[in-house]
Image 1 (cartoon, rainbow over the protein chains, first blue to last red):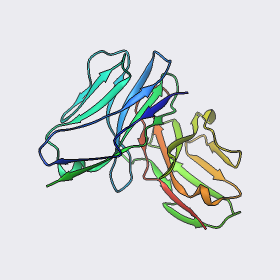
Image 2 (image 1 turned 30 degrees about the vertical axis):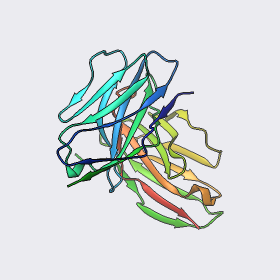
Image 3 (image 1 turned 45 degrees about the horizontal axis):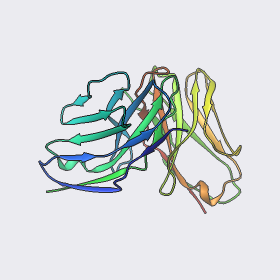
Length: 114
Length: 113
């Protein structure tokens, strides 16, 4: 069974600084997708960034970027120029190709200090 | 464009009762999936529906059931409620299968007393 591990239950960062959230996963599949979702206190999950396993290039979305290490099964999220609105729970998730089922990590609570 | 709508947003039930939660996906989306979120277990997959067919089911007891209608709206039902069923139930939709992006609703917060 696939598993996703987020080893940092909580992280904090100063406004305008950079923070990296860690995620590792375990799968025997070769075709899959990885995601970072953000869940603010209002609870609605929002997709931050996605990465297709077959793509070697790391995904980037504005201030958000990932470091995808397929062989190490690592998928970290870097947030640059952190803003107060980035404060939320961040979930790393895995999806096998052909399925809509997401396997989530336990989440990392990110606090942004002014 | 309206997002994923879940009703009710909050509800309180007692042990032994049953509950039905509703999810209206984004217009044009045909795939709906459900997740249970609790502080202890985190986010766990419940069901996945596409074109009224259940494509996948998570590891939950038979008390948890669901269905999808021809207009893609989905409902999930939990019978004989237990205290441990207290959770945030999230619905997510996507245009079709294998698109990669799920859009989530705000969830239905169920409290079982």
